[in-house]
Image (cartoon, helix red, strand yellow):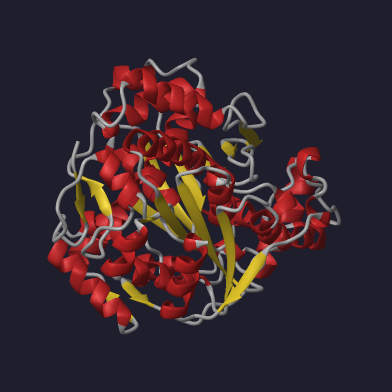
Length: 462
């Protein structure tokens, strides 16, 4: 299995090098050269299997010879051993034909744990074999950072630096990043929004002297390993509802497009997915693009669903790559136009995108109303992001096709918004009950590439 860049200029890599590299050296994102497919019989044989067994069968074709079967199975087992539910990703019925996929039973209470815990295990295995050390730098709108820190804290071969937008994430999200005591993890509050964090991260990857000097590695959703691990819960949930013998649709609250792109990969692998619905808040650039063909950036409006406060959705580049028939030059041109404020997708590419994706937008008031209604009528307390997914699903679902909404975070990660909507303040799990009394360790940093790189080098050296 080889991986190629969405911009067509970087050399093809195997799985391990792709995982450790993160961003391609031409600025593109790695995707599989070919998508492995599973037969109807292969998918049907997943009925009754554990999450870990399904994960092995779904991901194994993508891994190639990076790990033996025995080692890879062991890494998967270790990755999910700390989850708080035996099903790992349980389904809850909200109503007739509408189901909630709970993806918040991992150690940091967000869907990012499914990928990050496995990435941590794979990094550790690969680095222990090579004896090398890497520097992980990540950008987060809230959940990726805490999941990365949890996965890599205390590891000898890794230094972790996480950029998050100062004062633009929830207190729980912030404290999950700023209270770990391990010396190899560093939380950095950047003066700017998430798009600024993500831009500086990409700048670091494109500064090859810095990248090579610190052995830079990335664990944002630009890392193919992140997307791959998220493909699994599409299979586990669809099989639970009767796939491959019936179609399933998904509503996915998303800002950076990685979680829904994983659903697209599952569909390409043979899972009978009917519709993949992009659910956005008022920072609705994805919905605008899928509606009009124009991907034009606008001001980011802070919201009660901060993980979706994004205007530059990195993984959308992977979707464009396939929509433009894998023409790296065309994608590179679009990304150059994006630097100037935006681009327009060709009609042919829009037809391809609309063949796979629908979209919907939810206002702040509608999000609060959905949290309240879900509690009153469904007995389910939702985080604001999950509520956006539920609202869009209710508006767009086909009564003849089961709809699964991805519940991306535990409501306790956003207690102020949940309490405002429902009157209930969701408590943290017992193992995190002292989070608000732990001492924080964080550095405020400017939106300046040179100063960020100097900070990182100094902390590695120390």
